[in-house]
Image 1 (cartoon, one colour):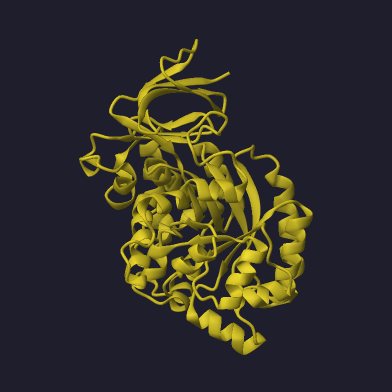
Image 2 (cartoon, rainbow, N blue to C red; image 1 turned 45 degrees about the vertical axis):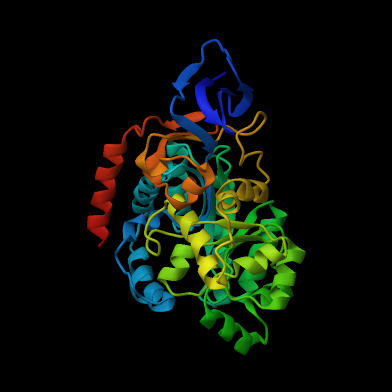
Length: 416
């Protein structure tokens, strides 16, 4: 069994050791010993749970900086979709490998993803060693005559998904109510539930979506999804900005996983997430980066900072969204939403751990570690990243990094 022993690391304000056996944390404490274990020196470092990015489009790394300062629909229709239409599986593979590099270097070991060329992303995630809930994108542009083709593709990818190992999980990802017909939405939800898959969807992202849904159906987007039977505890709903009072009741009733993408929402001027309203109703929130074309990075340290600041200015109260609370939105909240024994570094949990360098200038002085992590830390504070008991990065070194960067540059040049 693979063993890792982290010696003399700061954990829960105490210098101690962490023993990893297989993919689990088996012990924490002083003076731990283990035969044939890989030893990692934890001196001047703190051990923390690795981050989980609950909504992104990994291979959109290819389009970072390609189409900025635009509203959502012109951005999608005029810039993003035309280039995505030219992408091959190999392009998406290298785009995702590069995204995994950025995530690993910033302490992220799980991506809840949604993109094209499912196998390209799955191969990349599997090789890089991260966890990926890999959403098969469902989109018919409101033409349900395309459903038979979608059904055949979903069946095919479901069969093939069994071959990617425990870290790559298939989900179904109907893009949004404005790009997927009602018939296709209903079939997708039924298929997912019959096969034990999660649903991942953009919901209530813009005012335009909210108003158009009311105009067309006499319902808000949340009410519409409830009416046609889509909502449930297996749904991961990204953005969730434009909600009515009744919508919040439905979110609570169905135990949706709510994902907040503050940087993307500010950049696309989509609206302000009602953080206080979720907290008031005790609805857990997860924070995510969205894709690199609308962020433009995958650094969850930065995302946490914006997630903490935005509700303070929106609510006119600096006490809203304290750092310790926001920190949970990338660790324990997503772990609980996904039903994983993770989100905390303790015996019995999955060995998804990062070590941060306490000598990094952004972490000095250390009056309050939670505050430092949310308000001043950046990706380069992470020295070591471990996922499922495997070291993916040590002292900021990742195998084959130069090869990945070289091939990624080649793909970008060919496409754009």
